[in-house]
Length: 302
Image 1 (tube, rainbow, N blue to C red):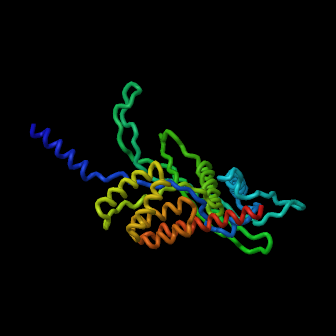
Image 2 (cartoon, rainbow, N blue to C red; image 1 turned 120 degrees about the vertical axis):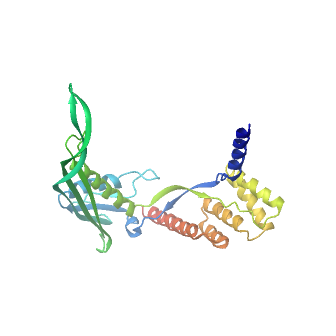
Image 3 (cartoon, one colour; image 1 turned 180 degrees about the vertical axis):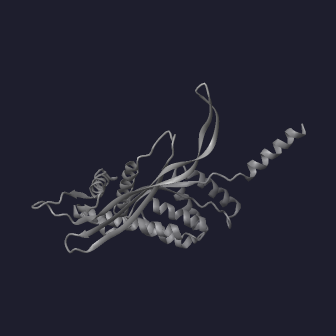
C-alpha cells in the first residue's frame, strides 16, 4: 500500500514538473542563396570542368540545377554552350579529381579458430592484414559573368574517406562508389550555394505572462492554445492585449510572428527589436526580405 502511494506521489510530481508542449507557428518563405550575384542570373551554362572526374561532376551539376523549384520550374535556364547558340548569363567552369591510395594495415578481426564437423566452435579476435584505401576527392568550381567576366563564385572543397577491407568481410565497399557519392555531394553543395531555398519552418511562440494581471494572464494562456487551430484569431487577440498592456515582451514577439506569417517582414523586424532578445529572428526576417526581393527581381527578367 505504501509502495502504491509512493508511485502515485511520484507520478503526480512528474506531471507537475514535466515541461509543457511548446506552441509554434508554421511558416514558409524564400531565403536568399549565399552567393546572391549568381542566383540572380536568369540562365547558366556549364563550360569545361577538367580533371578525371570533371565530366561526372558536370553531369551531376546539370541534374541538380535542372530540378524543379517551388514554382514548378528550375531556378536557372540551363544553356548548352555552343557556337551560334544562345548566350548564358553566367558560366560554370572548374576542376575535379579523385585519387585512391592503397596500403596494408593491421586490424584485429574475429575469426574462427576451432571447427568441428564443418561448424565453427570457437571464435577469437586475431591480428590480420587488411587493405586500406584512402579515397580523396577535390573539386574547384568557378562562376563568371558572361557579360563582363566578373568572378561571381569560386570555391574549392576537398573530401576524403577511408575504406578498410579485411579477410572475411561480408561486404566489400567499392572506392568508385565512394567517389560517385563525393561527386554528387559536391554538386549538391554547389547548388545550395547558388540557388535560393523555399523553406517551411517553425518558430516557437513566447508564452511568458510576467507583468500581466490574473485575468489577462488567463486570456493570454487561452490565446496561445487558440493559435494552434486559428492563428489569425490569436493574432487579433494579441493586438487587443497589446493596447491594454503595451510593450509586453511576449505580446510584441508573438505579434512579430503574426506579421512574419503574413509576409510583413518590416513590421516583424520592428516588433522583434522591441521585444528584445530576438537577434536570430531579426536576422531571419532580414533574409526573408532579401529572398523575396530577389525572387521579384528574377521574375521581372523572365
